[in-house]
Image 1: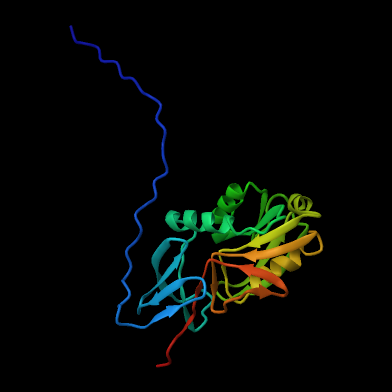
Image 2 (image 1 turned 120 degrees about the vertical axis):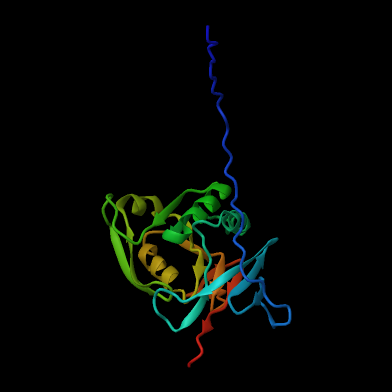
Length: 229
């Protein structure tokens, strides 16, 4: 008589594993190194190395989708778990005292911003670049060096959440400042005060303040003009 085999399934706890970091071309030690005030950065022909708070990595240089005649350092805040976790931990320690809510600027900064808010035990809203099913209370158009012309939308629920609050506005990278300035204009008359702009990196310009609002970052990324043929 065939023996019956019983299969037992035991519940397992799944751990999110950080994927191995992609390997980019290492900077040539004979080439010149560039020191930023807040981070150490080293340039090679195809990549740029940044360091902050014990984290260090090379990132590729690419042309922006806006078509600007420059190369920018491409930092993947969507899928680079190692970077996002390290940055969120570092930024959470720098949130100004008295902050009541974090305003996250959508797309690339979504996951990062939520991690920062969770570590800081603060509520958050995510301002998106397209209309949601919740409807629109306010909107504003702006232009970005990396992605061209865009819009921001604030829903009725978000407007209610930020009323009378002391907030910080958070983005992944601040370059010209156009994105955070647009966000400040969008929410400015609804909040009690904007305590600061926060980001992982400034880009091209090492901002310390924009329109009188302090800027807090972990490091700086240069922009590389393309050489004319």
